[in-house]
Length: 390
Image 1: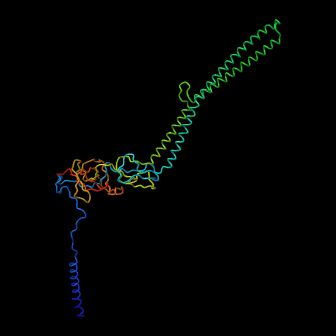
Image 2: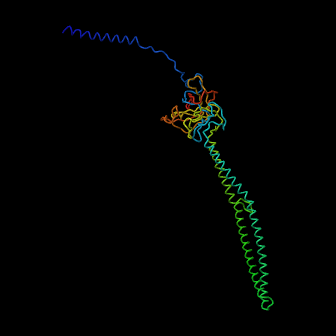
Image 3: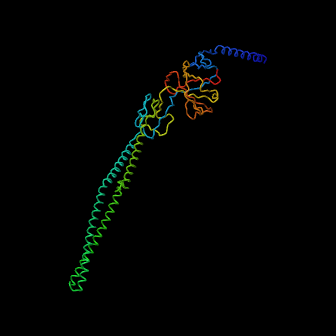
């Protein structure tokens, strides 16, 4: 018992001390040695510590800028949704206002234009036909008037004959009392009067019929033209309206057909093409635009100034920018405009779901150093002389 107690009392502590010493030795001999590593890109030097002085003093505002074409990029969408038939836009190509960017399948619209054109031609033919009948209607009026003159002449002749025979009958009736003429002769004269009355009635009926024909002919002519002023009648006016309506429908169909061809609204350069033949082009503007255009000219930088720095910002303050990855390049900036509306700050992707709880003032600068950016949307580190600068 005493020997075992001595081993436990001295052996276990000795083993523990040996293990501790060995652990300390291993840790000391195997500790990694740190080596100096260069940063992937040189850090941005604030204006206050610029080697050339820069005249900024110690007060400046640091911000992030993104290059954009003058007037911001323009996202082009289709006027009418449909399948893309052809794409003429090529990235990097300069375009003029009115140049074709892409076309949407327009076979149905072209068929509609052809149908409307046929309607216009049919309406114009109807109007020409109505106008061609005007001389015929005028001739009908003249013929009816001549017939009236003829019947009136016959009626006057019949009335004169009736008056003559009536006088002879009265004379015969007086002579019959003196037995100068016979009863048979008086009866013959009476029958002659009756026949003359019938001829007068016939002539008057013919005159009335001729007047009715004149009225009808004038009414038909009046529907085509005013005989006194020569102005178009209601039928011709209606035909003209039908031609006008058909022409308007044709113009609308041609407009619909023209909207299937999307053209450039500006003189500029094609920055991006996101549509290809055979794809469906929506009528709404997608987030990136089917074709993205930009005006040519000096590049602009859209700078977001955090709300905590807005009180220190002044438009007259000097500013410069360095492209990300090349801090040795310092480009002087010239103020283009300040958008007075303070908006929520967005992430680098620009999507609305990246909005964070910070508001920014957007300031647009023009790059004044002749720098040729390899692409639109490049990031720049921007420093602006603050209001409290030296």
